[in-house]
Every structure is written in structure tokens, then in C-alpha cells.
Amino acid sequence: MFRSLRSRDFALFWGGNFLSNIGTWMQNLALGWMILLMTNSPFLLGLNGFLSQAPSLFLSLPGGAIADRLSRRKLMLYTQTSMMLLALILAVLTSFKAIRISEILVISLLTGLASALNNPAYQALFPDLVEREDLLNAVALNSAQFNMSRAVGPTLAGLALGTLGAAGCFYLNSLSFLALIIALLKIAVPEPQVEKAGGVWQAMLEGLRFVRQNPVLIVLLSIPSFLSLLGLPFVVLMPAVARDMVHTDAVGLGYLMAGAGVGAVIAALILARLEDLAHKGNYILTSAAAFSFGLLLLATVHSFRWSFAMLVLLGATMVGTLALTNSMLQLASPPALRGRLMSMYNLSVLGLAPLGSLQMGTLAEQWGMRAALALGGSVCLIYFLVLLAFLPRLRRVAPLPRP
Image (cartoon, helix red, strand yellow):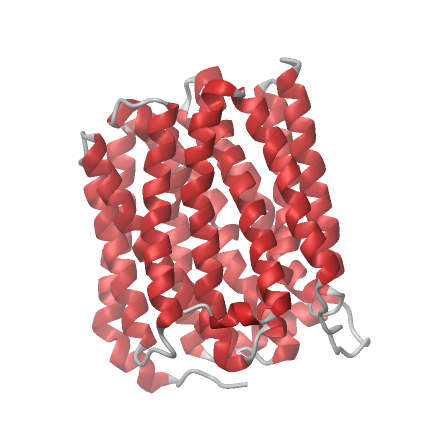
């Protein structure tokens, strides 16, 4: 299950990300709760989610081209340091009660800019740190650490909000970036081998041509795209779900988010045990359909226990969908194009998420939380069931490409 961690560099990278992500989840929960208390507006929750992720919509593809042409390790050092300083600024402003919604939105936007440049390099580093046969294991263990942090971070934030306040959560997040920065300083990553001719725009077009020539890759990328637009934005509205639908406080919100993390960790560890999966496409689409159905059920909840159970299901099926999609794309990527192909994955997961956050926040403001969740779950479920019905035909159209 943990064979990828035998690699010293991957173990350092994994551990640094785990600690850093705990801080990020603490900040996300504390910030969402603070916005809700300041404004009482689901729309502004969605707007904050939009601004924190909108740069990925525009910078994912250039970021992938840059990650294929520059040192991925150095690029991550710059972006992680920037996000650490922004978290520190947020903490200081909150400590002195000088924070307003406008400053929060600006800091979220700047953090999103750094994250958009960071993510393609981050995703493209895994094959440089493990053997090819361990790639699915490495992707699954990365999902496990991310979602263990999803379980630990919000729980700690829910508890810390009552003692340290929101500012304390922001200070801890700033400190947590040091774990990944130190890990990046210690690992050895090969420099990308690229032709110096041509610029970023030409490199982006080369990556897009590769995807256009392989229809199965287009279908694979459409799956996280639908989830990001209509399903995953439920996360940014969880403060309102907790307060208005389940009638709990910040501590309860932390436990609910931990439920999603628990489900995700279980799914990731199951994937990590597997050497390989035949018929990955069926597993991906079945998991995506189950996620959509879980979102429909979440729209009907009234009790804390039922909400927790639904979030466990959503966390597990989210990882089942995204981790397998990620590993299939990684295996399909020639090394010289890996950053660009993973930038398209990031565009579908993170770049479209701000549009999803904005539309779900708007729907929740106008029609209510339950209607917004039910609509997103219904459209996703219909799409994934259609793909399941036509999956054999899609396989005959074009086999998954190999590098």
C-alpha cells in the first residue's frame, strides 16, 4: 500500500504537502466561516471561491507550458513562498481587526494566482519521484494525504476558531508552508529537457494538438470538468449548509468536512493497494455517478448524522473519480508533454471550479441551498449515466494513447 514512500524524495514531498495542506484546509474553513459571519451571504461565499480559483481558468495552460520548460522544483519554491506570505498578511490584518471583505477577496485572488502556477508543476513532479509502475500508487497516496489533511485540517480549524480565532488559523497556515518549502529544498528533481526554440504559446498549442488527436483524453477531461462546474462547488457553500440546513456551529462544520476527508482517505488507500485496474473507465464513471447521486441526497438532509454519512460518500467517490482520472492521464503523457497535459487536468478540476462556485452561490442565494445542490447533482448524474451507456463505443473510437 505504501510502496511509493520507499523513495526518499517522494516521502519528503508527500510529508511536506500533507502538513502544508492541513494548514490550507484550516484557513479555508476559518475564512468561509468568517465571511458568513461578516456578510451573511452565500453569494459572497461563492464569490470568494470564484476569485481564489479563477486564475486557474486562465493560467493553467500557460502554467503547464512553463512547468515543462523551467525547473518544476524552483517554480514551486517561488509559488509556495508567495502563498505563505499572503496567509501571513491575512493573519495580521485579522489580528488587528483591519480586515474587510474587500481585502479578503483580494488576498484570495492573489493566492489563486500563485496556486494556478504551482499546480501543474506539482502534478508533473510525481513521475520524476517514483518508478512508472508505482505511479498509480503515488497518485493514490497523494490523494490520501490531501484528504487526510481534509479530515484533520477542518477539525482542527473548528476547534481552533473557539480558542485562537480565525487569525490563529491563518497564522498556522502560514507556518505550515515551511514544511513543503523545506522538502522542496531537499529533493532532487531532473531538469526538464526541452527545445529552447518557440515560446510558451507554441508549447501550449503542441499540448492541445496532442489531446485533440486522442478523443479518449477529451472524454477523460470532460469528467472532472462536469464535476467542477456542477458538483464540487458544494464545498465552498458548506458553511451555509452546516448553519442553515443542519443547524450546527463551526465545530460541527469542522466535523462535517472531516467526514468528507475520512471517505476520501478510505477510497485513496483502497486504490493504493491495487497494482492496476482493468476497465478504469468504468470505475471512473461509476464513481462519478455515485458522487452525483450523493449530492442529490445531501440536498435532502436535515440531521447532522445523515449529513456526515453523505459527506463520507461524497469524499470517497470524489477521490475514486479524480485519482483514477489523474493516473490515466499521467500514464498517457509523454514526459516532454506531462506538464501541459496535467495543466489541462488542473484546468478541468480547478480552472472551471470558480465558475461552478459562482453559479452555485448565485443559485443558492436566489433559490436556496437545497435547489442548488439538487440541480448540480441531477445534471452530473444524467451526463455520467450517458457516458456509462456509451463507454464501449468510446473505447472503440480510440484506445488510450501510450507514451
